Length: 318
Image (tube, rainbow, N blue to C red; front, side):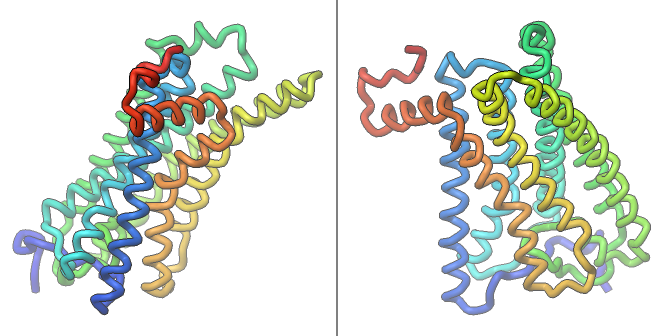
């Protein structure tokens, strides 16, 4: 029997055994990964270079794009490398790093989505106080709190998972180092550890969820009281992208943690791909679809990239 001190690497779950399918998975995930990096990268560049987008809403969106790039970069590159080189191995240190950054980016993203709901609440319900409640200092502090909560959550979960003695082999039944799968390798009964993880996640998730729900109850009440249909449409347009991202994020997370233990390995693999890969890849599309200012800034960035001309300066303030 092996224990945690003698384990130097873990074996991740392969997407396929046949070489042709492995290369197909590599190509598919490479396309998704590059699309996610491109989408989030364009948003980052557009917000940084267009002075019209230097507002609290876009500051938080800038942070969200950074977190999305971190989320998808935690799992997909290693999965692609394993498919390309026909291997399943990940080092013990690499596995611990994957667990840490996975919890860090996802927890920070959920906290940031909560902060963004407050931004929408102030913008619609208290527009006259928007500048005083969401100044540059307050925005920086709220963003730092979101990143800090993600860091604390990641430290607790990583320490909890890797303080166990492992003696059930080193095969992790997932395409990345997922904590519940690592707990299954422990010598002792990991039930209490799993309960602790679920409770810790539930406390963070429920607090943020209640705050988001209360914010949107107030937002919808304020919107429905608006006399102008045009004003109502504009308010809903401001909120719909954020609401769609929150719904996508929560539905994926809830389904993941409440799935049946008897779920088949193939379906479990699909679920893991959905909640770890799909949100970071779709978020740029969701936020840019109905946002004319952001779409205009992104188009100018693309024009600057392809034409590299004085007609398209990098700083898009005109």
